[in-house]
Length: 428
Image 1: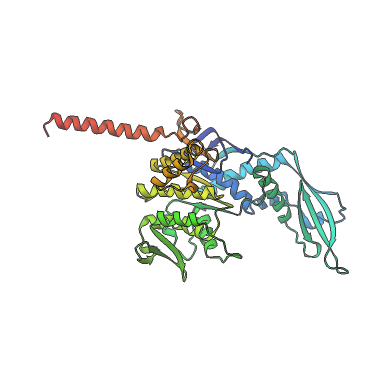
Image 2: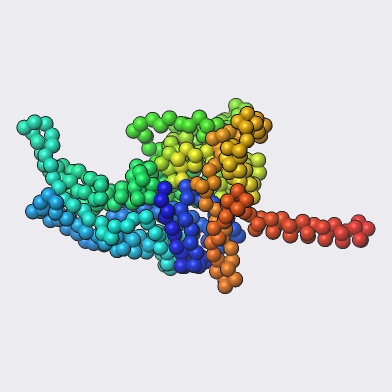
């Protein structure tokens, strides 16, 4: 994976900050400092590369695609787009997209996404070829961009930006990950998601994040062309964190406890409802090729199950899922820290000793996370009435620092001590 940098000059409360794309990104800090905004910015990149959003760019060009192909010869340049022009548009569109997600069309921001692409111009080159059965050959249009080729039968060609959008997405995906097929789906788990799981009709949402969430619900009800073999480890994690299983039965989501009880999702605990969309998504799709923005996965979970949730997310990341997580949970971060430390410890001690350690604490090796895949970002006040993003140094102590949690705990301990002292002094 090559380096992608997000520069934020202004976005919500955030000012003059920078962060680097990682497969697993964790955003923490006080409420109101912009955790969701920056998570939305990262999510935008994945959304751009998996959806048809680039159509908006070509719509602004107002190209006559029909005449574009007339009288073209092999080797002719169909279309040239300066890379700077496209990337400038992407930077502005990112802010528009975040405004759409939060229901604020007037959102003002200034961001820059630095792609690992060095060519100054995207050149779409025309070619054609004959194909088909002998004596029934037909002409195929070919469009080349860098080393990628888009073919379309000339008689079925429709005037649209689709070939150019597909090629651009392939080139950008390859420039980052070296694999243009690495991304298949991109989803968002917003706050209060559990209450929406039993809705059968799409309400008139005021913010785009819930529109996107409803798109996930539609995908969950759509039949797959090919059955996906589910990961046994992920299935086991889902069972642990849910203390049972969820299944779609005759259009309803049913919850089956480990004790054998069954009930509709509407009757289940709020923790089960909040996890339901993530659970149903992993039940249906392979984690490989997914990108998921997960707002506060610890919501409504007991600390023990917050730890299990960290195991599940770690397992999904190790299975190829890219994740952006906002959190207020020290239990979640502590568990991620331990999984990273165990990853490093594995190479430093005896195999049997390590295996016994994992067994004692009921941790599977599939949960262990390479710290290189993790980006930890703390949002804090900058003293000027705004906030800034601090990239936390995971490798200093082989863990994500969480001093902000310690400060709150320390203050609470001090207060408890003062109260206890005063009570003792009054003789109570």
